[in-house]
Image 1: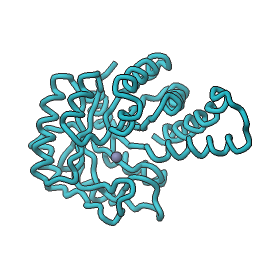
Image 2: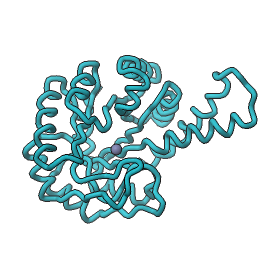
Image 3: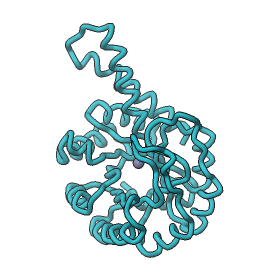
Length: 271
Ligand SMILES: [Zn+2]
């Protein structure tokens, strides 16, 4: 199988894009992989620190690895929003294909320094490294606080770190949107022009389809989807449980799993 670094490099030339979806348990994992298998589409499976704490690092990664084989899909395991070098190191050790080091809330120099160290470490594993420049508001943070990526800084950042993929702040935010988000596509075009590397869009939940397509055309090679996964799963589960006294969870969970498959299939169709 192609490394994620190579795959993103290829998509960068072809103006293609991968969907990167977070999973939280066996059910969300299986829902995502069913969609990828149905659509014969590659997919990135993401884990955050919170999901790793919840499932256990080894459990999460071995379950994902086995499931990828079971479903026969092209998929990679990626660490989403790592806040420390130590977390990155332990994930690379258990076989992650890709890591994101997120020092976007630190100073520009600190962000450069740690990203460079992570790129050096990942080199030994042939792993892909993503960093974030500018600031995409996190869940629960005011969305007005996001600082857009400055192209000149992005160029310097990529040159000095050798990072493989860059998450950009162009108007998206994590979580759902109150009003339809407006992405600054001119800014995206300029960042792409000066960095030339695969760019990543975080906060993919709720961005209009046409905007997603346009952003892919302008250089986004990875779109992250997390909030909608959680939302679809729990909504369906609540809906089913209200009218259901079934105690066999194997008969109840499949409805929620199906809602993830439908959601991810619809997103894959766009990409
Ligand atoms: Zn994110």
